[in-house]
Image (tube, rainbow over all chains, first blue to last red; front, top):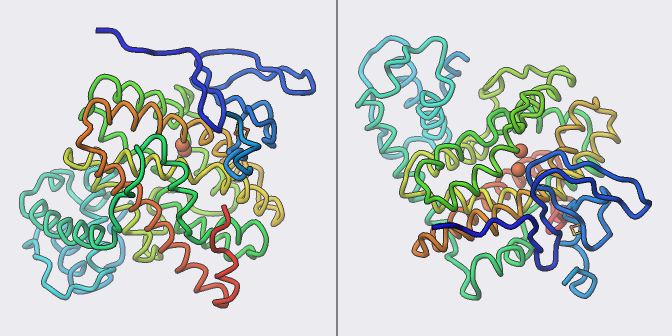
Length: 67
Length: 322
Ligand code: FES
Ligand SMILES: [Fe+2]
Ligand SMILES: [Fe+2]
């Protein structure tokens, strides 16, 4: 039996999880390397740690959260 | 670590037994709550770090296990009495974050962020060290009890907690570095004598859930609630510590948790609890019980500290802010 083990997971209202090593560019074009087995890429663009999610999406009004 | 200072009739006799091999007491009805909680904490520590002045053989002493079971029954009864029951709407993974947001516990991080003074923060660092210097260890007990999917998912998170193979990034070690840089004793259990009932209960609940297979759901629900209430408060802790000019090593512990727990909360809810529920759907109620217990115990601890430090009016201001 084999199981789903996707490289990326979209979290409703929150970040995109990515597995493995990647360089992710922040909105200023600066690349940031992943440092952990799974990373959370911010999709609301309101994080104070871009490009990474810092949980800020949770305090946004529902219409400003990523789908 | 040495056996702590006794805090009542039960721990007097129990610690004497641990030190000398004299008879193990039972917990008489009416035992003081803090006394009972400290006794249970010490009995659990026999399975974790042990004590320099207690024979390692005592870990599996049947008389100690009997006393531990008595104390665990009382703790479980108390936790179940406090529980308001599972929410009636929606599936765990879909509703979990909204449910967490609806809980209106007090926030110590909000107080540290804006108003706490240095002595209050040092007090918080000392009593929280009982947990932070072990962090994920009680959850590690759960691993062998899980199915293939939830086991792999839990290890994916735990690997990050344990530094991804780099001891310099292991979370409880980061806290130890922060304590040392702040002039505190970072040896495990150094501040147990000042840990209040609420701290002992928090740690005992985690060990209870970790050490009993029947609580595997509660352990993972607790993990999910813990992770889901960490990123934003860790940011506030960072800002408060910077305001009070605490050392960079301590700030780094919280900075790591802002980012790590933004990942971990998603993993805990979606991949860990999500796969557990697919493997063992009957555990959903247990997940909620563990999650509630996590938030409730943190709220009790938060209220204790704020009552100690602030007027009632200011305590109310720390309500319901992340
Ligand atoms: S998606 Fe989490 S902070 Fe933007
Ligand atoms: Fe951690
Ligand atoms: Fe975490």
